[in-house]
Image (cartoon, rainbow, N blue to C red; front, top):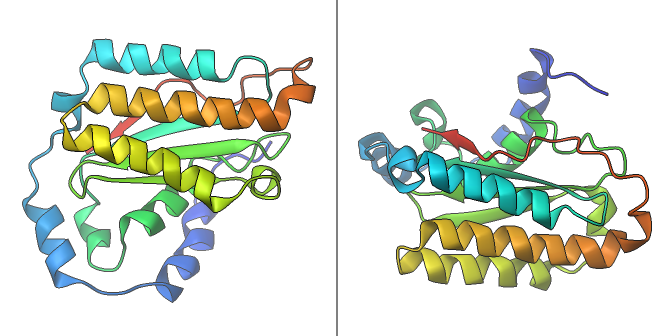
Length: 186
């Protein structure tokens, strides 16, 4: 198992710089955003989401990591959009480092009200982008109705269904490699 080290940031940084599209408007929006992740997701909501992840991971070796972020870090918001941030977190949190290449990152940015799903190479070969886009769209609809917990749970259970279809044959040796608790950032 690979342990996150100081070199992780160095490895992910060039990828970020290649795709950078500077935006003063994005930076200002995230700079002025009031922290809200903990306001929208109480301790009880977080426990409910963790339970949903546990249930969604049952019966297959797929791993789901939920990250909820209020806003992009101000020092990165000028050069980084939500998709790039999700990819960065996928790398830094080691979601890619599962035994069966079965990691999925569900990233929710409250400031932009955007949902990103980053999948590992093992799953990418067997699924189509339209499946993941549909999950994101379902979640965005619920977010627009201010159903935050429900949106995350919809995403988690939908991802679980996709993983169950892909990894159903691997249910015998199930090992929980990633934490089921949602990670709440800023």
